[in-house]
Length: 481
Length: 105
Image (cartoon, rainbow over all chains, first blue to last red; front, side, top):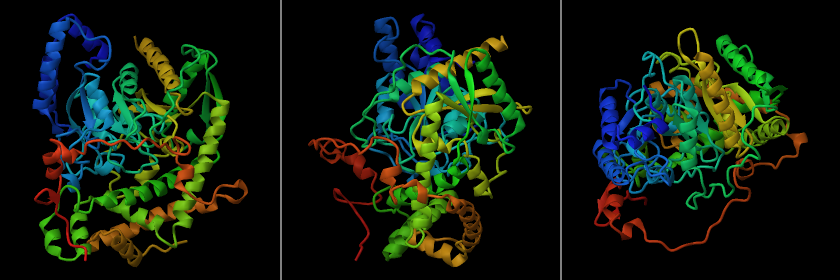
């Protein structure tokens, strides 16, 4: 049984459990888990943190009520966020032995709020992938269907939350990497507004798209974690100066305008997913929401636009992994004698998907092709942004599936990168346009695989998304009981 | 329409400082050809009437408009403090208190 933050704090308050005992339970479960969700477990560090929390609890008699919303809560961190003194690999052989000398702002904030870090979570190498099969440390298995993928790139994070190998997790989302695995694993994931959470200490993949995001088993815990993470950071120049939009009134479903884009409920989406989502939307309509048909003219160009921009930025960002400043410098590189050979020997440690994207990015940026590919994609990005700006002037939120199908079998799509990319059709617009989007569990298909429903909202409207998400979560709970 | 062939893939790999095995070269060429074929759909988008700026990530990136500057504050470097061993430990190779790098000339 997965306990919420509130339930854990209640058990601390009542003296039924102390943080060190809770952490020991989690560490034992991680040890016994076959999912491969963690790359590095920091057991000793976590137990030391937990013993300090025990002392605070013993002294105060209950959970500190201010400044410690994550007091004693075991958290997992995706392995592309730096935690000082603990190995950070990005699931790559290039960074196999890299130990960062500082922590990411997101990680600092979570620990300052009282969380206990259990370890670093598996992912697709450098966050490139949607299945978690591109990890140099082996794939993560789906938490309830181990012959299937958990989604990616934050696959370890979503699987760990679902399998109760941490209470909440930090992921990152460049084109759906929080929302897709959350959807496949049946948990909640948020891609916040671009700039809402500091990217300082997050290894860059595509800097104009990357955003840190919370994953949790329920909406309330996702919001608690989000509130800890959100805020300006002078160490990230893209960190927003403005606050999350405060709603004028408490959330009410009455009169809420939910946009339903025609382009997002088409043949290519599994009929079970369409049915499940329509049912949820009808439920919200029966409670007073208004469903508004929408048209997003440029949605068919989103995947092509996204991949051209993401790989271009990646080819530039990943040029730093050259064996000069970071990680491993293979003997072959030292012996190469010539600088080009030195670089090639070092970069031979990248996995296939990373190499593919670097080459594609080099193509899109190279002289002769840059106008037709990179620059054109930047312009189409603007058109997509306009489509959504127009849509959000007519509706409060937009609904869509998270993915066209539920979790697929391991290895099923490994040889077909294009097919993998097309799976991101519903998630990439939020990154291209920078607005927030949340992935919510929305029933299961006939095989028992979770279906994900996505709500998107205008910039900085996370509070609205959480309000709607709580409403749906509560309604579904009542329906089941 | 760009023809993706093994020569182009090889040139791009060279620019990317990546070495491909003959198997990878063949596989990547096929996959890149499919992907480039797919992204060609952007060529049909009409940009002319929309009066967009000609180019630029800065223009299309979401976030703070105009960027954010902060005061330049003097702070201790990680290398000036007890962080030094941790910084040097992250270097692939070290000579005294410095990162040892390959000769470039």
